[in-house]
Image (cartoon, rainbow, N blue to C red; front, side, top):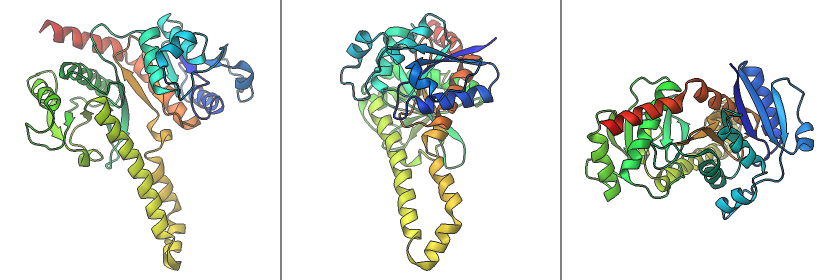
Length: 334
């Protein structure tokens, strides 16, 4: 059975070229997906090589990346590429949607047009990040909720645990709470309440507190906090990696020996840069929705968008949302 993916072809910094090229790469890499590109058919056709598993649906307009009222934007632009792609998941024309459009508009649109799971009170953005050891960890919530109740964080941890098992292949993923210290009792009232709930939940493999300095070599496969904190952690990681790469290049450009070293290390520096790039990370799933919605980074190019499409197809293929629903239903019954 074909997995059908809706792509918002007009959202992002490089739309629609990179979205189209990413879709072409995705259908070449995976045989059981069909893709529908929502956007301006004329612009899409400039980059699209005809393919029997890629279709185009004409949309009208886009949601601006700097939109200050995302809810109004979605409600007043139901024919936009983002809104139409999201609506196609709710109507079950497609199984998942991938967009690199405005984050808050995508979250608002997903709530309105796809709907939230009844078992989850808050959604969460959860990118899969690389570690220094070449492994991966899930970081959430990376921006959906600036403030949150600890019981909602427990629901998100359950979702992340199922995702880690089904998509990342981690049998007993550990959950770590991002905090200013590792000792119990550290942090804000929110952190202390969440700590107690995690510790006392027999269905969550709780590690304990994890300091931000350990996030690139984390002792747990899932790191969780409120959207404000986790978003700062994510952006600090990205900015530090970029800054370190720049400083390293500057230092190696000094003097004859340094320049020779730089010349010999070009491939290594490129690999270092790519480990934190959108092309490597792919996309972040929005947890808690009735359908699969993947937020690709706004700067994603074709390889990154291909990865986001592959991620979406894997989530559908592994039936992650239904499995999360089963876990949360059991949690409510306990």
